[in-house]
Image (cartoon, rainbow, N blue to C red; front, side, top):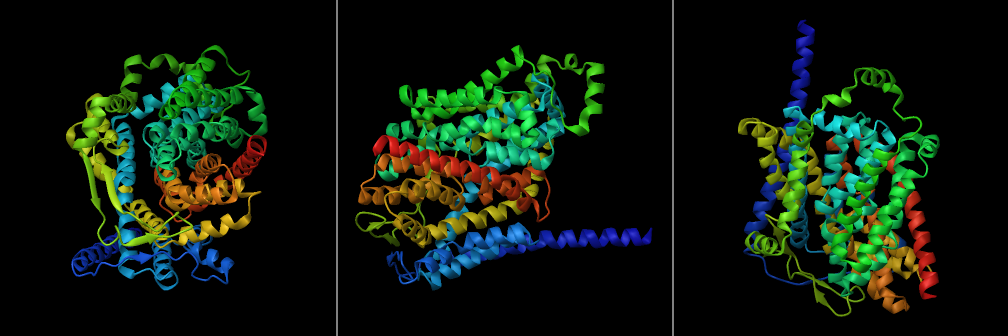
Length: 593
């Protein structure tokens, strides 16, 4: 007994040291931040001109050096047992040294860009993740998550149909309402609760969140692309609707195949393709005849409605279930649990997400939206960075100051709307304020390590942007020539999304660059820009922040979580990248040859 107690004490001591390490890291970052703010008042303002060719005689070495920080990060995640948080810190340090020593960026400006990225990681990304996981923890605390699971199971006992409804339909809907990793944070534990294995749940959520992200929250990625390229948003939306949604049309079948193999997919043929075609058709019609901002919501809602109708009027000859649950399913059939769930209990269990949909709808009403945008909008130039960096040709037509304005809407954003939904849900879930508060604190502790990692990753992304490392990569890739540049624009979208963490970030990073090169090569700028956006959607599965969110949603804190997820999603992602690249080349050859 004494030996057991000693071992337990040693384990607790090790765990405590691990937590203390993170507080030391955060404290060190805070000290640097305070020094940076203090030093800013004595800093002589100078404009630094970006350098896109630090090693002009060695373009291959330039691109290898520029891309080394994310390579270091992924390499340590896959090949070592180092915790992802430490790997991200090492990668951040390497990015800083490269930007200062090789790209000759002023150290103060480099540090400022890191903190600028960290600020954007904290709000809205971590804020959104925190509230999504908080709602889930309150559902678990109240016991309503069990009812929610049963209500989903009652739509169909077939795991393939559950995958399509929850994995594809609900993911697409959440992506259109609150992006920044929220769909992965919500869908992964929901699938786990339904009986899916943790890693399968995270794999489904990551892959399902790819193609619908072309539209994001109210088509923010396309709006961003339009703003940096000055191309009409409706024009971009129409072209994207013929690219990314076609990949989305194949996603239901791909998700079913990942879960059940060829035999399982053929067992419900052609249902996945019908549901996928529904998404594609509604996306095209919405982009052409309604509004680009409505594409994501309308396509997702259409998929959910069609799936529910199919579940109501059609049943597969044999329900597909996991091999480990055959005995439990037969017991359930014998006891006829379906009749035990009351309609009011089902509504109560879904209340947080019902509140979220209603709140998003209300806050998008013209007058209310304008009030919230004006009342809760924060905007200020980021010290040490705004007006300190100059872009030069060929990235821009003429030398242009690279702005760094921190803009956030404190009230009308996905994270805050989720927080309001969580507050309202405490009444329907019958939780006391004390219980809800404890759930919130528990959630904050659970995502703390993931938060540190995400802050580092966004710091790397913004540092690479402002130091011009990403532009160096893009310019070298754009030198391939006219014939295959449409395919390169897709790959730039994938790379941009991995580096920035979002399709909107990828469009902001490479949008203008691809248009400038397209004009120089005599290509159609609108088509090239749209292809960049479509390609960005397929980078979301390998975005470090999404992998970290999925790992946090699984609940495992070992260093191999992200490695396993990369292995699981990489083959499917590569297949869709090749498919989209071929589609873009065919479309361009037919339309603009």
